Image (tube, rainbow, N blue to C red; front, side, top):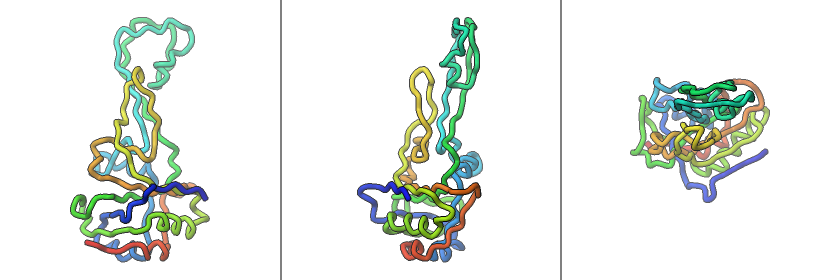
Length: 211
C-alpha cells in the first residue's frame, strides 16, 4: 500500500459529529463518502464546496480572432471547439474534476471551540493519524487500494485561461473555507461503491470524545 503523511504530523485532529454517532466513532465505525458527495452539498450545507477536488477555467473576451482552421487551443480550454472565426464574443467556463475514486474523512486542526455546525453537537479527537489511517486501510484491504493524509491548502479554484492553468487536487479548497484548517484522509477505493462503513476497533482505540 502507498502512504503519504504530514511531516511533522499533528498530535491531534478533531471532528464534529452528532451526539448519536460518538459511540460508533469510538468503536472505529465511520461512514466514508466519495469526494463528489461533498461537491453535491453546495447550496445545501455550509460544508458544501462545488469546487472540492475541481477547478473551473473561465474565458470572458470580446473581439477574439481564431484565424486558423485548426481548433483554437485557448477556446478548447473552456470546452469550445471553434476555428476560423473573427471578432468573437466568448463567455464560457469549463469545470474539471479529479477522478472520483477516494473515500474521504474530513477533520480539523482547529481547537474544538472554533468549529461547529448543523446540529453537530459532539467533538471527537483522533490521535496518531498515521496509525489511524493505516488501521482502516488494513482492516478494509479488500475495499481500499491506496491511502493518503494531509492538510488542505486554500487557493482560488477559478482561473482565467489567459493567465493560468490549474490542475484539480483533492487537497485544495476555495479560500472561503480556510477557517476550517482541514486535515483530510483519503482512501482510494478498489470498487465502485459510493460509501464505505468502516468497522475497525484499532482505529477506534485512537478516538476519544472531548466535547
